[in-house]
Image (cartoon, rainbow, N blue to C red; front, side):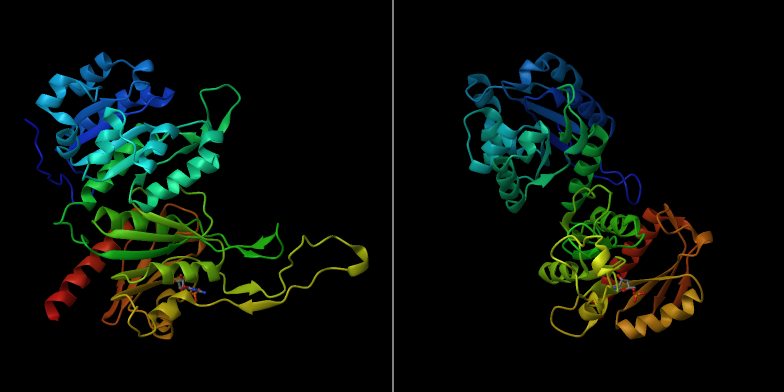
Length: 422
Ligand code: C5P
């Protein structure tokens, strides 16, 4: 009845024919689930649904059943259901369990391991990956109790998509708490489904990526930064996850959303970035795409520096930041098997990057032309050269996500070759 084989329609993007168990919680965002179900079915997935009692206050089981084309499960103690399917089977006969909207109440139940209704019993019984799409009022999301529950669930390996920041259903309320849009949830679902596919080229591999700028404080309100958007590094993290890797993305401050299915560690300074990278090791591949500040302010003030005429214009003293790429490239038991650095140059791009590869001790350098014509800084396209011990390959201009996919495919081939040659 339910197909469970997966086939990739294209090399990177589509997973189809999977069984999704969607648990619908009681929030106004429940109406978006009808679209979510439709989008999943369009992609060839089957969707079984469980609705909590409060979800049924927002949308009806009749509507959900009509769109999903399957029975809707609502009751833990339904004799027919328990005999026919049962909460244990329901939780196991799926490739992935999705909770949307994941209300504060459902998250709390999950964090505590409660099982007093069908939804929570299924969540406690499942042996499958679980993705939650939180949706609640910003005050509820920011409440310390919810924060504790989210941290517990993350530590338990539960995957999150959203919430987004924006307007609430309540007039005049805005902030973090809007449920991710159906297509964002679909993207997160497909990333997770791909990850559990053992045939993917990076399945079972750990990839650590750095991305974005760093912010180096001058005082508690001012900092030194650079123009890096993080688009290339985030695209690499996404591409590695698409190929089945477990990905840790150490990101400086950016305005981009966290890529789906990627473990993101948010940092501000170069020192924090190095610590986070070290904590994420060991890894099979390290890709260092962040634009790390070369210097930090040695005499950063603990208090806001005042515009005080008597003390005159402040003088900043700088001290060199750790070179993360160079530090991690040094030989040692924690060195990833493949270390890839980036080199942003405006002239003599290849020549300088060849020198940089040696100076940093990394295996490959992706040299990108950040001159105005290249359009790399902040843009969606990039023109790069891949520099390895064997030579230089110049790639045509392409979208950053395409650069990312090509790079991680090359990394996967390299790992496979090294395994063959051992
Ligand atoms: O030396 P430069 O900044 O041009 O080198 C670029 C490469 O080195 C990038 O891969 C960048 O992420 C990495 N880098 C680093 N730590 C620094 C400076 C650069 O990891 N402090």
